[in-house]
Image (cartoon, rainbow, N blue to C red):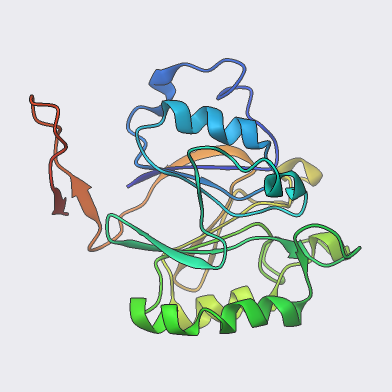
Length: 219
């Protein structure tokens, strides 16, 4: 599965200098937050795949202007082609505005997902705005990571953890990719395209000449 992850700043490559061919081969687009809703709507207009998103701490405008044609996966497990995707947006609370949460509040959000986690038997991809505690986060409170994200990875062993919030231009020691146990960790700052093999994922068959979509087949 080829995934385009975006976060924090609108990519000039994908917006100012856009060409439809740049989305060729992309199976899924995921936003980790803090992006203009118009940017997500623009990508959704040309993408032939879902555009999923969680809220960043600066996405208060989404309440009045949500991204059109996109799917919010905050506090939910969205299943696409058999891949289970858990969304938990927002940052650590530092001034009590927007999408900000204390560690206790984030744990409460996870507890409310208990039934969905049981029904889905876990998840394959964790999508957040903030990083996990002590995993490519920063020491200042606004960019401090959540311990509960580490707990989720330790319990469910997802294949992939996508986050944003910590801009890669903040410092030379920040990583685009990392690992946590069995989980591949990716910072989606700006934009990043990568491939990942997800066992049991469904792959679409080519669209027949009639124009009617084909069924999915397992890899």
